[in-house]
Image (cartoon, rainbow, N blue to C red; front, side, top):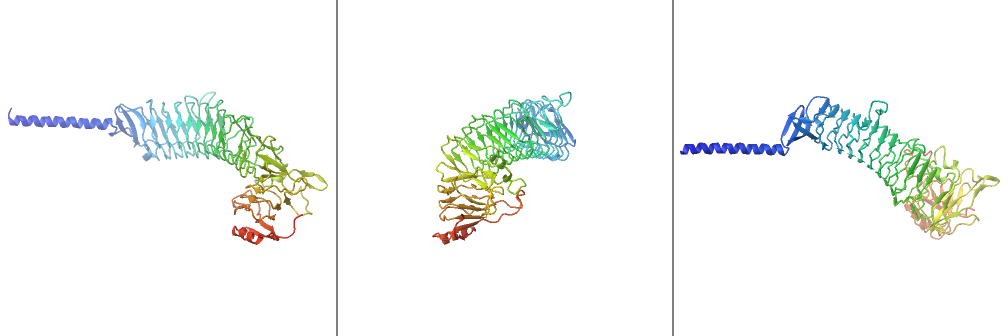
Length: 569
């Protein structure tokens, strides 16, 4: 072979090798999904025989996603795939049948013109933020294969009011569903955090039996959500923090919300449910944990029942704070703690027809658990209700009641009522006061509404050394005199009370700058308060040694203080 022939062979061989290498490179690009192709308005990445749509570049307002593109099976939608068409696309229908079809996080987020979606069959997860901020979205058809609606999936979809599974429900015929409710698929096991938060158009929601978890803020601020229907035998075990906060869901004795397998209720889970139809709640014995303020500010909640054998392991503070309509409650027999602010402001409960009993197993009571103040400036105030008595089960080893002198107007037997103090067994620490002076129970010809710690025999109670926070919150009398034995006054001891002057001979007690503060809310913001209440003044017996130094100490906290002579008898 000549040299020239050899050169030709070498050139041909190099060319063949180059073509082979280029084919390998192209094959690698295709097989690694890095090659972008375009068809029918869709740009997609190819991975073998499958494609993922990465963007929609068409001009149609009603988009149909096909099962295949150029013979390749469509298996998923990438993040922000429709972001460039946010103002164009009004509906999306999927004809995709791939068994593991997936939608990436935030795939359709902020499509502000999108009104309707028909999701693909076999879809198992509606991903994080998939439709978040789609403010025009009204209806979604979900296949009965979806098991999880992830966090933020429909958050902020303020027009959304219709979701259903065509496998479970029909819009036609005698059993047709209405088009203004969420009919969640029977396959659904979990609703993620904030999944429907701020979906203010939702009026009704139907939850199937197999759902197990409702995440935190799942329906938070769904202010028009009134009808919540939970299937019989519901498997829900967990309701997260703020799950139904500021909704208008209903529950009554005749049509109760029932969660027979519920274990945990998160903080504020049913907080501020502001509707006249949320009047009744019954929890099963499976419940072990109730988060703080779980039912706070539910104004119409009047009856709350828990099974006697419920084993509560944890209960946060303020669970029923501000439930001004609460009149009847059943707590578990073995409950060991009544946390801080549990019944704060529940004046219909604590001034109701029946005595409130501290159970035999209660070992601790938190600050302000029985503090009353709601209604002080309303047309109907606690003074309009029958006096309530706090009692302690005779088997309880931690708490006791000190009966105080009955209040009566001489010659008027109808004005008599009982009053007393909830204390520890030694009578040294005051947790709460029950009863109060009002216009029906004191003689205006005497010293006005003056309160002293006098027992039923008319003797000063000398055992008390400590007054816990909020102990005298909301009381109606004007003046109070506490014995010399007092060594400590807790924060907000006279919170929102009518007390204007505090008399004592003691000068060595512990206190904070908030001890004598009566209002910590801005009067302009608190619409329930009417008028103003003057500052409290502390007056000490002027002959007591060390008074001047103690007055200076009070002054350092901005507490108005002075001295008095004589006594109040």
